[in-house]
Amino acid sequence: MAATDHIAATPTYDLAKEFKEFDESKMGVKGLADSGITSIPKMFIHPPEIISNDNYVSVEHRVLAKASKEPRISAVAFFNLNNNANFEPLPELLSSDKPAIYRKSTVTEYLENYYSKGLGSRSFLKKINIVN
Image 1 (tube, rainbow, N blue to C red):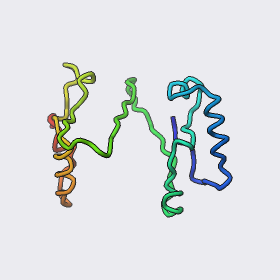
Image 2: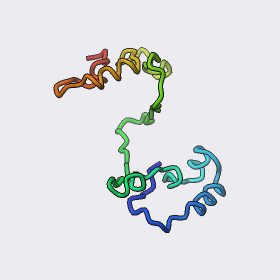
Image 3: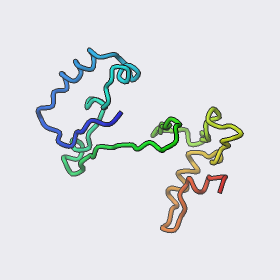
Image 4: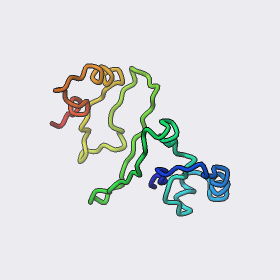
């Protein structure tokens, strides 16, 4: 799914009409995909143009799939996390052929790294990488 092009957001955008069209389609994300919808409806996008009064203009984002036949995986990030929660690769995604390449870490560890960064610091992912 690609984000709807909302660069040229206009005052004529009809949110009620889009809600009605969405309501008349199949419900839920699976329903969206099954019904052939290929873009995210504007009602699910919070355009930065509105928040920033057109100081920041969003661009359409596209993803190029790798040549491999494996599905692309997306991860979710939350803003209010337990600082002591452990983050590590999902066990379901690990095998003897594909061992973990990152060690277990915490939000506190990530934030300490983020706030202590200097110009010559390494990225956090490189710091917790256990392969290299």
